[in-house]
Image (cartoon, rainbow, N blue to C red):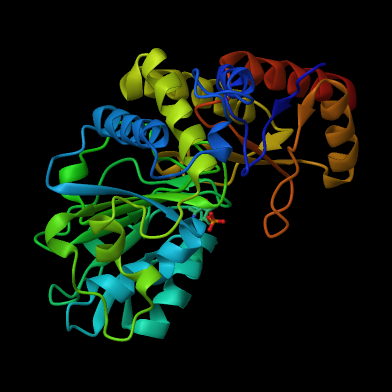
Length: 360
Ligand SMILES: *Cc1c(COP(=O)(O)O)cnc(C)c1O
């Protein structure tokens, strides 16, 4: 067996230690005589797995007690609808910041339920920067302001939490959750799909301040009401038990790495060395403004796009997979989430340098 370095944007690489642990426990979880997949979600074994996952992520993110942590189905995309369906509280207006492809999808969905004011957009720069906050057009009476903390496709990331006064702030953190320290108390809602930084797809982690729960729009399906999930400990219906368990293993792994601060330091090192190679060369380029660059998703182009296919095949031969850029951007994209070891970035850098030396 030989595992590659997988630079996929999502579903993405999972730490090998997590996969091995899941393998060890596949047939029989800790003396229970069965796989986690086969357990009742109401049984004491699964309840202990579920509670540990929640406790670990609360510890990792330092989540205050007045926030609920929900393990929901339908990925981050379902949260695009659940956020407006639950947070309007009788209001009609919402504010959204448009920094790229994922913001656009969130906006499109919010428009079904609310009157969306786009407070800022980076469309005129081709989504290569984050609009300066003093230019944002915020309506303080809107129900909330939503932004995408890391644009997975464009490779654009907020380096700090925008200060929007007393307004409730909502963030889609799908592709940078747990990669850097953040102050949860600044948010009304944080949500993230699992498959970038937390393991499997199909499950979303949603962190909601308690006072925002209980206001689902009349007529909302039960599954779309945060209150039903919060009241039932995310077991309103049968939860995605195996995905929840795997997420828990990723949280355990993160704690073993030294927690979010330690992984953040590693992420800074990984991103810096890759950007340094791109910036030092006339052969590779990244279009994103320096202060808006993502530590997680690093798109880059080759000066001669005719070499793209050769680059990808040589990368593959070197055990470096899924580097093809998103179809809307072209070129390459290296997604280097928490689970990408520093050795993977080093291997990519040496392959890039060798490719430039021999093909430029
Ligand atoms: C991947 C991604 C999503 C969509 O996640 P799904 O789980 O496929 O619904 C939403 N937002 C961002 C920023 C993403 O990276």
